[in-house]
Image (cartoon, rainbow, N blue to C red; front, side, top):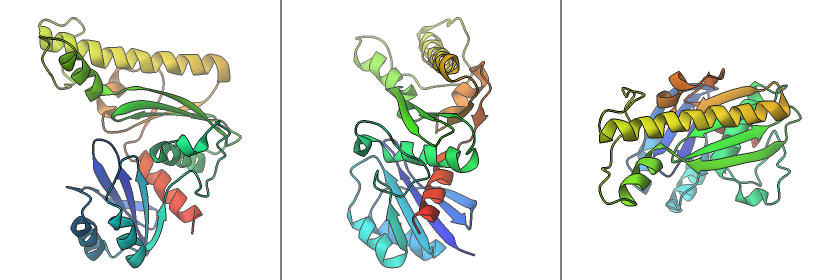
Length: 241
């Protein structure tokens, strides 16, 4: 059995999925990216391989630590991928988006695929059945919208997302929740519909930490998978030896 650590360093959370062969054993939320944190993971799981997707300025020492104890790969636009990136500046594509596309190309190779990632931002990522990642779009995420309404007004409070909210808000809190969550759901459905007009049949994949707030409100058929990015990281790790 081969153990692989797949690190996903996003703007909100630092996480690591532990794979035994191609099966996720555990997903760990890291307290930080200190040397000690990474060394403790290595001691606990004794990995053979590791891969890092990072969209932040992380502690550079951890790359040396992972290289010393595992067969390490840092995901960049220069990684060997199962798809091409025929866009103007492939070096600007976020590592997280590359991992999401890798997951669906690996698992659904003969279909057009649209991946909606719900994190700090919403990312829409479209890869066609010819394995060309054509790009997509980015818009503000859930927490960002709540914060923006609080910080750019004098009196609106900072509220948190809650699955229990009415269509017609009855106070400031529920007005904000209905506006943000239902507004985002309608945005997601609308963009899916626009892709359908252009490309016809395709799979829609929903993933990310805020996924649970939106899946019940979407009219389009979706595949919901909270671990999609880790599966893509594992596939890229295998592709890169």
